[in-house]
Length: 103
Image 1 (tube, one colour):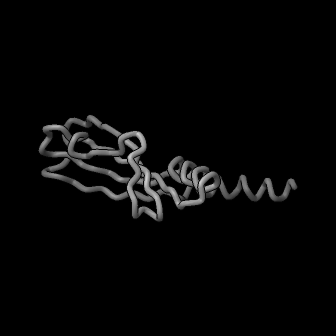
Image 2 (cartoon, one colour):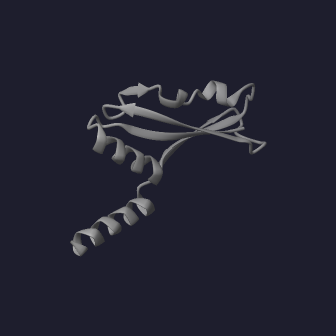
Image 3 (cartoon, helix red, strand yellow):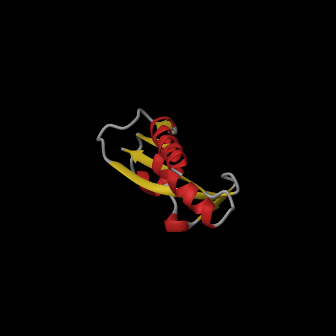
């Protein structure tokens, strides 16, 4: 029992250290003001079907009238945790990503 608990804790710690992935798109000359807006996107079936939970992330609305900005899409520890809990409850491969627009 204690050994399996240790294994779970070590696995979670490793995920928190190494399980991040991100992708950044730079539009125009990139951000200049440092203002950020974040939202979370949810997907089902390995990212094939976007779910409208919480309104999702509309990057056009998040950027507003800015012509120079950056969009960062990342899956961090919290996204993996949410995905794991959601898949334990409803086994439909639900995943989440965080989208941040920096103006």
